[in-house]
Image (cartoon, rainbow, N blue to C red; front, side, top):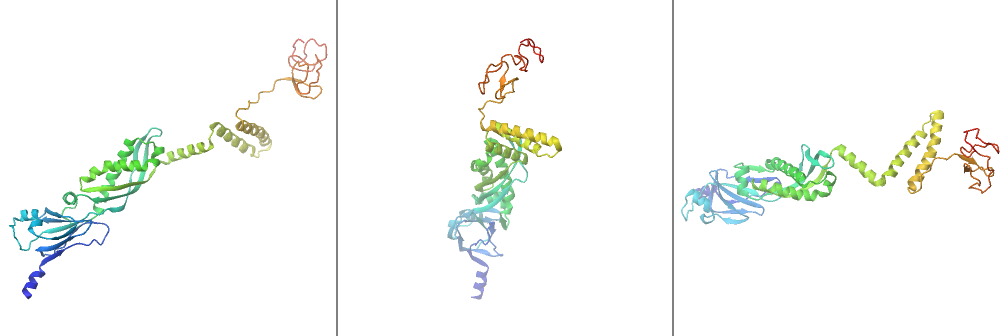
Amino acid sequence: MGILNAIKGQLIDVIEWSDSSSKTMVHKYDMNGKEIMMGAQLTVRESQVAIFVNEGELADVFEPGRYELQTSNMPILTALKSWKYGFNSPFKSDVYFVNTKQFLDMKWGTSNPVMMRDAEFGMIRVRAFGIYSFKVSDPAKFLKEVFGTAALFTVEGVEGQIKRTLVSGLSDAIAESKIPALDLAANYEELSDYAMKAINPKLAELGLTLCSFVIENISLPEDVEKSIDKRTSMGVLGNMDQYAKYQAAEAIRDAANNQNGMAGMGVGMGAGAAMGQMFAQSMNPSAPQASAAVPGAVCAACGAQIPAGAKFCPECGAKQNAGSFCTSCGTAIPAGTKFCPECGAKQ
């Protein structure tokens, strides 16, 4: 019995792996120098695939389930080792467990700005960041192309490659979509879908699949953002003519508040009049603009300004003294004067 127990101690009859981390992609089963017993129990859990490798050459692949290892369910290994049917002796083989679950909340970002051509701003540089998730879609291809025969492989081994592929795909998506810089924020989902279609064929060559690609933010250059802020402010103000008048009124007010003696007082008085006229025009754009005063005479009854040579005052209706004002410049002249002493016009 002691000899039998010693022999059994050198054989493996149960093969399984429990993932204790969230970042392990491939785990090589530790044989510890032992051989696999024919008829051993192989347990492959959900989100796992077991791959047998014989002397560095990929052999049989086992999907999730429980298996009793026999020549019948290891056809490739049986052929590689030239076993005859009914072979029951222990054998050596490397066993790799590949994690096929989704690896979530992986962060990506542009280490350098991405160039894009915008119809409105010309050539600009943008930065972007977000998250993505991926998984192993073809374990056999992943073994051949990526991790080889390493005993342990984690997401850090492919993270850099995936991130660079993501940024390249996003750059192509932005360039080919021709979405204006001002509209990028409203098209994150469309850009994500477009980028995924461009990225997945490249990752498929490594046996990987991009499950989700989320753009959280695309930041524009500071100068472009300032320009957008100005346009937003103008849009809030509305009518550009009123905005210009408002700006002028603000400038006049600042000048009027300048306490520099008589000059400040003069500006202040002018500012008051100009501001009143400006706001009146801005509130009623259809109102006629004030015209320059036309020289004329003064009504002898009410003192209102009247056109030169008018016989009646348009304000109070009082009859004016005909001939008492110059018909040309409106200067008061004695009755019967033939020529105006002010302007020389014939009366």
